[in-house]
Amino acid sequence: MQTIDKVKSAGLAKFTSLVYLYTGLGIAFWMISAQAIANNQAFSMAIFQGMAQHRIISMILMIGIPIAFISLCGYFATRSYFLTFISYLAFLFTLSFIGVPIFYIYSARSIIQMLSLTSVVFVVSAAIGFFTKKDLMKWNRTLMIGIISIIAIEAINLLIFRSTPLMMLVSAAIVILFLFYIAFDSQNIKRIYQSNSNSSSLGAIALLASVTLVMDFINVFLSLLQLFGDNN
Image 1 (cartoon, helix red, strand yellow):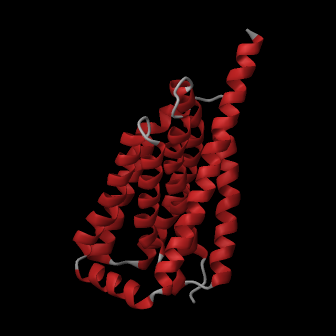
Image 2 (cartoon, rainbow, N blue to C red; image 1 turned 90 degrees about the vertical axis):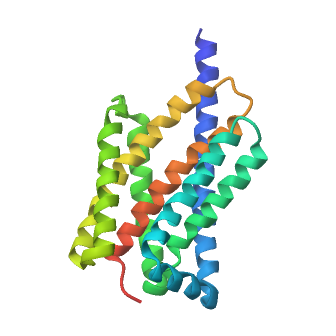
């Protein structure tokens, strides 16, 4: 019995390490992709001018396309590691467009500082979520209501009010909300492993599990930049 428990613990530790490895690599790929797009000013300016002229369509595409690739990751996770990996990269690349403006708005020093700060709070929140004995699944409904509310307020502000103070309040709310999400998603790694411990596709499943953690990190990072980043 003790041997079985040790095997399970070792399996969970390996799976968890893989999830966080993919998370770190995913964030790095997202940053590199965003900077590469930003460096091509003609292309990036054409994209954002089109987005400014068609705000509603742009919002739908910026939300819908990454979600579509996440769905593909989920579909391929138990079928093909390669196709899951390709869908994962496509998700990160499309998501990188929201990171392009930071290279025009903020200094390199500010970006590095907020990236470091986000990494610290991410590790702390992830550790709390992973090691706590409290069942965080009870947060699911509250967190979902919170994210829907923030999306609605942000959309209204973007399309109607365009208020800077309201934007700052929304950014602060996003930081708080996604710190809870990091803890929630970190604990969820255990549930994902328990449900798939006998699967032959654990590598692809770990890739899929890292998607939410990558999005948590990006949301906190961008919001901290809006709150504390210096204007370039």
